[in-house]
Length: 493
Ligand SMILES: *[C@@H]1O[C@H](CO)[C@@H](O)[C@H](O)[C@H]1NC(C)=O
Ligand SMILES: *[C@@H]1O[C@H](CO)[C@@H](O)[C@H](O)[C@H]1NC(C)=O
Ligand SMILES: *[C@@H]1O[C@H](CO)[C@@H](O)[C@H](O)[C@H]1NC(C)=O
Ligand SMILES: *[C@@H]1O[C@H](CO)[C@@H](O)[C@H](O)[C@H]1NC(C)=O
Image (tube, rainbow, N blue to C red):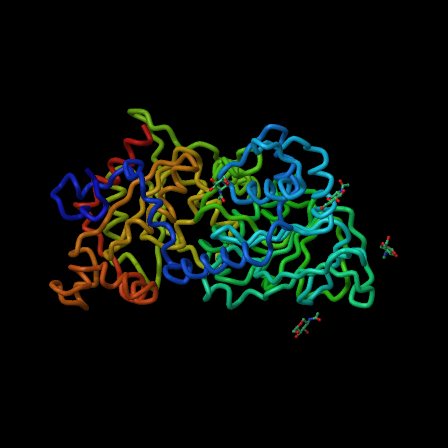
């Protein structure tokens, strides 16, 4: 059934959009844009993690998890902890931990003086410091004071969760995190805070709304929400307009003023600092790893609250009801544009929709735009960042993603299909036919662009983007597409 690549090719039924919930197992395609770089970057990081840091970075709570009678498990960190106990002779001959207290006391001393920098996750690096942490504005070092009897250590980190994506990380200032007992090196505090701080960079692809969400806003929710607004954000590489655009949201997560790290010079001191952001998946939250089992539904609710959006649930159509469902058509001006938007609007109105056409620009006023989205029940658009606005839709709304040619079904599903499901929206994915793509005006229909998109994918993300994303517009065949809009109406009944 429904192998994604068969869409658009197998008669009327396959042409119909499908509910993507059928498409399980997609996540194996996940590390897409990063391709090779990610895989290489990842294995290098793993090697350094084990060779250089050794057992001293075992998180304390991990250690507490070893109880009398417990044996090894498959987790490398647990095994390392276990080995430490073994060296200290706290294991019985059967290999059980028999002296829990002795073990913990020794490691506690170590763990208390050291931050835990964790470079093992494939998406983000993170350091967590506790004690007396000093951050000088606009500098490149975060210092944690230790006593002279403790070992000095340092790490470097790019505090932005697009690990392995070298293009994005070019715009992210590297920070060094250092444990120091050198009084001359340690600046004196201008401000002593009693709250924790989260430090991250908003370099990367900021301004592209998809990346704003997937790389910052969602990871920040995951990282900060357990502090219940008692936390301060220090942001590097950030533009003032970006802060202004997302201020209503940032204020939901922190009741303290955001510090634009590159605009200050004084020294802020904190008892607890997290450097970097946790990220689970693209545009997604894994409730099993999130505080309070939060999910994308919770994220979407906070987003709606931030921008004062009141509609919680989409229209429920009944027969003979005068009220029309509202359809938002996300227009794009330069790439992946609809070539026949007037025709699409007429067809939608014939089917009983009230159609709204809007373009989600970088400069769009988010307060206004999010209100337009929240007033609608169905959103449709060609694969692209504008669809990120689906976070503002009321529950039960329908998202229709139009996928251009180029074997982009998996990317489409990962970026917006799965997130839509996770936010309790309905989702329809429509893959266009060759006749609906303007690529037929530029390329030989028997050549690799049409017959072997895999060969273009293998040339890398840039080649793929150039052909299928930057040079393709869509002329929807409204007769073919009609069934999708009818299906969306059925969802609203
Ligand atoms: C942990 O130790 C057990 C027992 O020695 C071993 O079988 C397992 O492979 C180890 N796991 C890791 C991840 O090192
Ligand atoms: C900590 O471990 C060392 C051996 O590594 C041992 O000599 C010492 O007694 C232990 N300290 C405590 C407080 O148990
Ligand atoms: C901050 O705390 C340190 C240590 O308690 C103290 O020496 C320093 O004067 C304080 N700085 C300010 C500005 O209050
Ligand atoms: C921050 O550092 C940059 C580069 O070193 C410098 O150009 C800028 O003036 C500094 N800003 C402040 C407020 O010191």
